[in-house]
Amino acid sequence: MNELFVFDDEQSGFESLVNANGDAYWYASDLARMLGYDNYRPFQKAVQKAMTACVTLEISMAENFQQEQRTVGGEEILDYRLSRFACYLTSINADISKPRVAEAQTYFLTLAEAFRQYVQGPDNVERVLVRDQLSQHEKSLSGAAQQAGVTSYALFQDKGYRGLYNMSLGRLKQYKGYIGNRPLLDFMGETELAANLFRITQTKEKIRKENIKGQKNLEDTAFNVGQKVRKTMREINGTRPEDLPLVEDRKQLAAV
Image 1: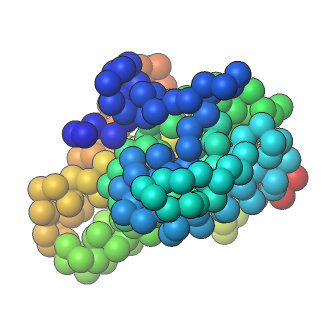
Image 2: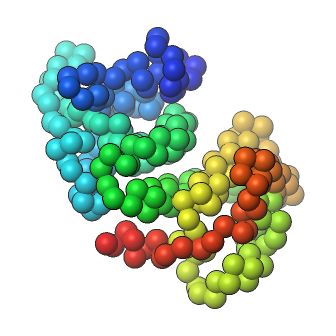
């Protein structure tokens, strides 16, 4: 399968593996294979983390995770029937070093309606989850940049912000009126977080696919990707990312 998730392809992709028994569901073992896991057992950790997140967010476990003993490949396993929302939570907690996991996370970001079936204030819930994804991918980008020969990660990181916002991170904080010491990302809304997530994942992919090396080339890459994301945002909704308002502290939302 060349593409991991093909929404409208009846022959392959995530949607082709849906099961129907009243409600649509996917088996965790099937999702594991699609995400590039050779062994189902390590993937069970991602499922368990997703279940914990479900409890934390006070979302019905029964509607999203159902255990089932199955025989797969001649082996008896504890499988799970996952709702579409559970597949999203599980992909967030999967191994992001696997390329297919990153593709899955991007796919599920387009399915915001999955949240609206389960919770009130879906924008806040999705914002918490997207912020968690962003933290994971920031760490992954840092590792990729180090391997590619970055000598100053702070300068490399700032170039990405300059590309997206047309200003440095320090200037951006001033522009938005933020005076705290916490990461500015904790106070960004869902749209702005998603833009930064896309910027970071695409920067990492470009570095990897084009084998970009050296501080200057890495900085240029971060800046150029940021500029393209900025251009796309302005073409779609006419909004400059620096003009998006700050919102409630993400950590307070996660603790509710």
